[in-house]
Length: 185
Image 1: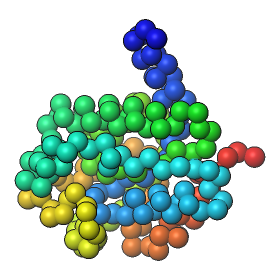
Image 2 (image 1 turned 180 degrees about the horizontal axis):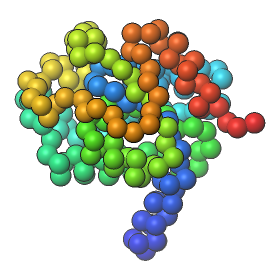
Image 3 (image 1 turned 90 degrees about the vertical axis):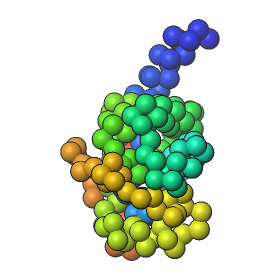
């Protein structure tokens, strides 16, 4: 297939995709909520695409050293991650649940442009709670947490989104999201 035709096909597939994007600061509980949501018997085949697998190893290594990714690195990641979501969703008619931090406006904006009909759900957690959860979880790539400057702060959200309380039981947050993953009757 010619590269411009492949690109147009990819863009059309992404535009038709209406994912539920669960986001929030690292350690908020996004992955846990997404995993329990898609495992729910009433989730109508919803599936989870966790974007943590898309983070390149050198970026993970830099996180551990307190080195924040450049705008160019974040843009490349966003493009690769959006392509991953589109590829993982090919041929599926159930709801795609995407979980990732989306700490920066540029990452959010990139995904909002690529998936304009997505529903966004913020898992709202304090820095302290998120830090406790990261420290208690083996294998989290923010453990140990990096020395954080302003660039590491979770940017305020300036678009419509649902808010889930990270201190609420996971099942309560899943119940709030369940209607969003059910197929229309």
